[in-house]
Length: 437
Image 1 (cartoon, helix red, strand yellow):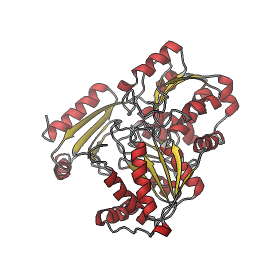
Image 2 (cartoon, rainbow, N blue to C red):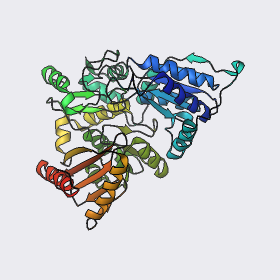
Image 3 (spheres, rainbow, N blue to C red):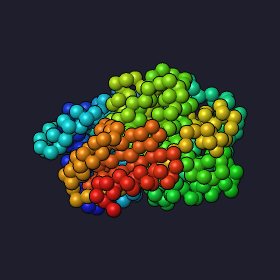
Image 4 (cartoon, rainbow, N blue to C red):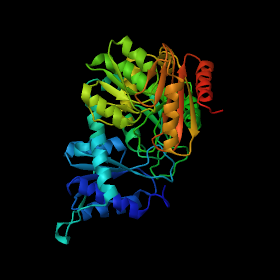
């Protein structure tokens, strides 16, 4: 959090550790629109330059755009300054290695060792790095999208879709309206001033999208689109002004694209069971990973997956780059819409129907969370268990997953079933069995 845990001193410490980790090589740096971004960038650049790194500053861009530029340039490191879907008073650093690939678990461990030991390598005055500003990142990302072989530009442009986009005044505020217009859409912008003043929750949950829903309905738009702060996620609002669960973004895109290419699907253990049904429909294998985009990306690379993603609204298109990309997701949803000759409401009605229930239970420490998971293994020993991430109890058409949070001392209990009542009951009975009320 800015003003407390994320201080200029701490940022510089991260920067010198990362500069040492990549051996003082070239680093692409970019940021989202948060007001704290310039402060964070100043401290970051200072630490990187002190280790001999040359900086390529691509400016304010979505996370996938920044990582795509790193891929294009083949640099040794990338730092994205963003707190993604977290509140506006937060900020953070997302680290990537060569060519914009997010750090593997092994690489993260090696970086952490340098950071914790503070054994950094600072260079002399005549070996300090420099800073170069490079424009054109947004144009490059759009060009890569428009060149995708599954995108029929003439078909989309002929449909003349009316689309409302809510970028939360974040990093998608410029690129997403620009892409939509390049695709021939009539664009209505909501919260697309890139000033970092978030008028709603940065996480585009249904409850945060009331304004978008109202505008879609009043304007008679075909579709509403919403991003989080760094635009790696995309969430949909139907033509009837109804906010859709973020689970639908990956499910709809997977159902549309996976049949057009070779390779299976990758999703986290807490992503909707719609993905299982879609994989069965197209006779491909679905691989489940622990929660976190890094785990999904790592698995995709190992199996040569056609597509990957999470239920958060993040979809990974390997033909573009290996990270969640809310901008390319816009193109995929529009192509799906025009190819179907129907509406988003029609497409959702054809999807397998499940309901989710989510609980978060605070605990004193991560050690307590670990003890609860051990208890769950004993309490639910007679069930069909998946221990990929926490303890997941699985039945034919429902599941419940108990896992510890990776960001705070808490236990998360997610359930999914064919009805709201069943999902709530499954979540509640699991919580009670673990001694919580």
